[in-house]
Image 1: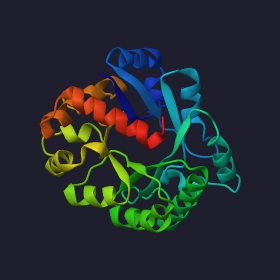
Image 2: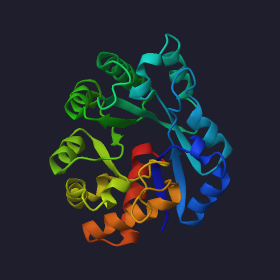
Image 3: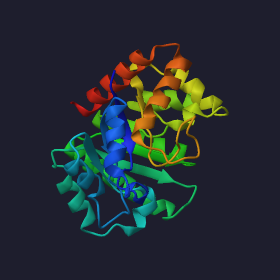
Length: 258
């Protein structure tokens, strides 16, 4: 069975020495597609994911401004973002949202940039990929107000909440993307959410090069390792690896209208 890594940062410098080999290992492991997240180092360059997707047939891309980079946005950047959404390999806007852990950008600026990007995504009829850290309530409140009325879905990237948070995200039309955290022994709330989530709302990701799953925890993550996350998800849910592979692949294809 094949898998799709719904979220990876293959433009990162950690892959400069062996990017071709990393992608080949993923393909050899049964990862048929990878979504290259296009936030890069932030504006004015919004094409990090596109450059990856244009070079590698198995990759698709997102474009967007990460909340860390919200203060970098200039007047022309949203016009550029809108234009890039017409690229044939761009499948979503992201990762976007709020990050109150680092506060690299003022919170009001983060909110404004998040709202503007939701409007751009809605106009383009593209789903959104959400980053939220220590900002759960504000993130969901803004989604409920500015995104849900459009009737489109999205992805809760690297879902790290428990069952109640999962249910609220699902109620707002989102898919839960589980990464390496779900394999960590102490991530009991995330594991419970993974057990209870509806089969038609689960995805898998690596967030490469970050958050490598057990048994590779602490090392550089890469898309081939998403198989460990899928196996853990299957174990938690009492399902087969083949079943989880099929469900997560079909779910992402449904969201992205592939």
